Length: 142
Ligand code: 5GP
Ligand code: ZN
Image 1: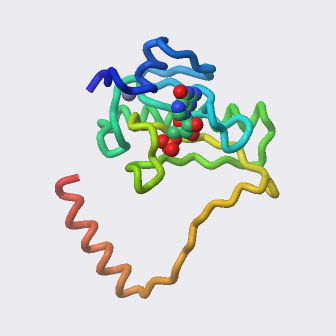
Image 2: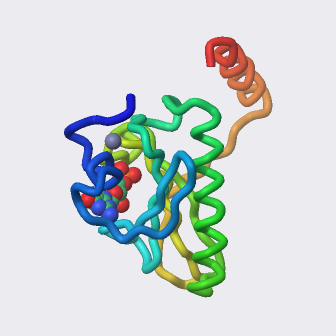
């Protein structure tokens, strides 16, 4: 699990390709996204290669998200943005392009023109209750 020889983010960890580093923790590093959605867009990744958030042990999740929250505070303080998106894609269908789990930390301001396609619907309470039961049954193996 430690390293995937074909992974671009593993190469950044190893110093084999350059990145503009921002911060480090025991189990994670943060660096600037090369294709930013907004100025200041930063990525936080575990030092070890895991594909998705579901593959990380809890202590790695805690460290990665702990660093993401610190980076978010630092961006807000230094860039003066109003808010931020902290988000993470799992699987190609969900927009994941790089197969080494990464948390996006994206500065946001009102009127910045970034549109988040989030087509919400309305759900019946009965449907929500049955979906909750279905997911609960999956919690045993999770
Ligand atoms: P995803 O779509 O997988 O959630 O996001 C991948 C992100 O990684 C994109 O925002 C993209 O700009 C960024 N990225 C891809 N390759 C590199 C790279 O070599 N260096 C850096 N700094 N960012 C990268
Ligand atoms: Zn990797």
